[in-house]
Image (cartoon, rainbow, N blue to C red):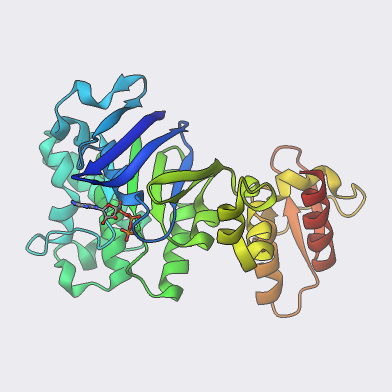
Amino acid sequence: MIVVENLSKHYNHSVAVQDVSFEVKEGENLVLLGTSGCGKTTTLRMINRLTEASSGEVYINGKSIFSQPADLLRRSIGYVLQNNGLFPHYTVAENIALVPKLLGWSRQQIEERTALLLKKLHLSPERYWNEYPSRLSGGQQQRVGLARALAANPPILLMDEPFGALDPITRASVRKEFRDLDELNKKTVVLVTHDIQEAFELGDRICLMDKGRIMQHGTPADLVFRPANDFVSSFIGRERFLLGLKAVSFSDVWNMLDSDETAGQVEADTMRESQSLWEAMEYLSESGGARAVAVYNEVSGEQREIMVSDILRLLNQFKQDY
Ligand SMILES: Nc1ncnc2c1ncn2[C@@H]1O[C@H](COP(=O)(O)OP(=O)(O)OP(=O)(O)O)[C@@H](O)[C@H]1O
């Protein structure tokens, strides 16, 4: 768990971050969202002390980050940079091995871990082990950057615009891989982005920032359905409908579904209750004429069949009750 209390950063007479406070629970994804220059990166870098705070406190599992040397702190926190930060003169495997080596892992341990991570990130170890970063595509470099940050299995991961350098299509597919990666499920993640769609897809909670301050800290649904002020409303702006679909999952609206719709056998391409209404929309628009999608609830063992008209009804009903 990360607790940030009244964190500020001043440069001479200018203020980069002012009095920022938030908590990130274990296993949660917190997104720092906002336009360029609002203080996201500075806030992130104060957590691993790449930037030293002017004032305020950060506790990780109850322990102040200032109670240990900054370089030791950084070995226990994964960090993914926007331009991936890979060393150009190191191979893929050497880049991934950096922190495990510093921690004194055996060669065999390092090789096993590297091979496992490459496979999980869809990079064949045989093909990419000895490759240099400049010979990889942007998406592949980004995956290696992520593998490097995950190598020593840190409980906390800080990510600065991790998909920022990618074109929109690669960006969407790497983002999807990121969401599905089991390595990340239990990690506490703080992710910086200026992309509101990305924030809504990846964040359990979002801190929307402006001019160094937090404008609203809440769930994606809080930001869309209960904006704290005019700034938040106008930031959400015309994307309200789409973001609403991304903010609501089937588990949020399960008891608004008729129980007699469908039950029984789970079909192969069934969605799960943790997926969003948006994902069901995407499925229906991409499936070439399917009128309904089956959604399976792992908790109750029930299955429902969902049509486009259900999705719109669920969104409206959720909004009214929120
Ligand atoms: N080393 C520095 N010296 C002086 N000012 C700085 C320094 N680093 C950042 N700033 C200023 O602090 C403010 C916040 O910068 P920061 O990089 O945190 O914003 P950001 O929201 O991450 O923006 P971006 O998305 O463009 O990276 C900006 O006004 C920036 O110019």
